[in-house]
Image (cartoon, rainbow, N blue to C red; front, side, top):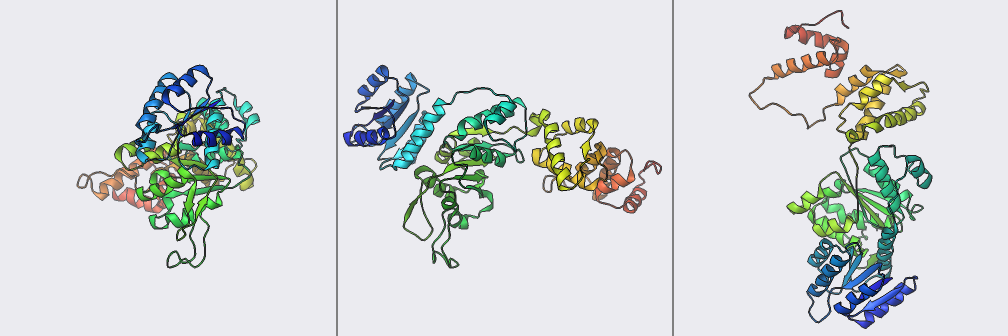
Length: 457
């Protein structure tokens, strides 16, 4: 049963009729005391709470009642509703445990979606499944993993996918956040509609409104035709906002409105449009820290963070590395027409010990490069180690010594010695890892009087 707490009988009646038409049981209360009595006497599954019970419009009365409700029933979901909504009220309400914040006048569709989502999440019970059971229940075709953390994560995805809850996916670069977002969409009731991906880090501030909300002809100098924005393209489907931590503060404000009210206006137009979407966001940044530093809006953070999914780094689930290697190798058998491709058991153990800071993306890149370069069908450690040496340091991430501590010549000597040690004095391998020809390396060895074994190559 849903409890509506509002002193305005017209509001209670309107909400009651709306929700009863959807099959929900409804009861109402007009005062704080009456509301607490209802909670004591009835089994309530959701509360819709108005924040003001008098002419005073600060929301203090509603916040006090919210605290009392949460003290008595901490798990009971609450939707706050008010005609005097402010950002501060929304944030304070979310901190006190509210599940959503809706302004009057409300959109019936948006309010019903919020009610449905919250009740569905309450009904979902945690049941631990094996990977085989999960694959029978859901579509996780392209997600590889049997590590316990991954199984728990997939369980969560399966439970929340059928709701319209906003999802925030966090994790290091290369952990597969986009695949998880696609899995949420594929297992949702919107799976036959659009899945629109947006890399927010790649959209400049000046183009944000046009890209996201569209524009009308003449909105700016080069706007020769109308343009449909990403939100309109995603209508009835899912929008995936990747790299949301890279969004500047001005764009965050513009994004908040559409996520809060599901309304927007195309650039250059005064016509308000409604949008029905599932929102999934992802970032490799720590949004909690960004909120504390004032670089990410707290109200936006609460809006996108109803369900949080954190992807573990590959080094934290090393038992999944053989599964991923075999998956990539099997794909490359077909792509490169090399049906006999395989990896030796010793090599598989070696791959499992790699730190792989670039996670799954780095592993896939390493395997593909090794397959392309090596002429052998049975890949060994040296096939991978050579390519790893060539790609292990990303541009811009090299930790260089302080100016004046080493000369260029000394750095060159250190790198040559390191390459020789890594490749067991094999000149051709060391030269390739340094980006040199064999003859060029020989010249440098002689120049710096570095000893080497001519018979080792």
